[in-house]
Image 1: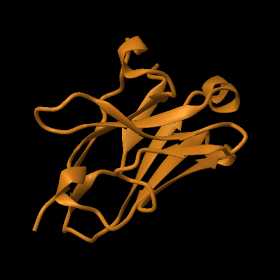
Image 2: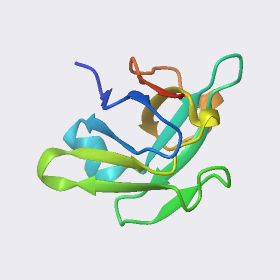
Image 3: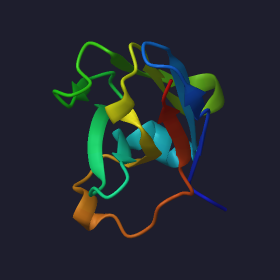
Image 4: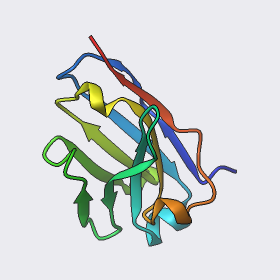
Length: 117
């Protein structure tokens, strides 16, 4: 059973919005900070947001003020609301435990976000 299942990506015009969803196992949802990561074409995977079980947040400078993470205890889910999207936000988005990228050995399939006119 996959521990992280991402969904919600799609094609959106610049300035548009999308909400990504991440379904987690209950144990991870309760105990672990969850990060959102993205991999743009030709670039390394990077962490863009983190939300802790206590509702603490971190955002990369590139998405600060435009992206917002949230938690849904009823569904063991974490969301990433993305607004004012830019072409440079294009990439495959993943969720996982909030850890350095190099330390993560197992990833979900991710969800593709394409920002283009």
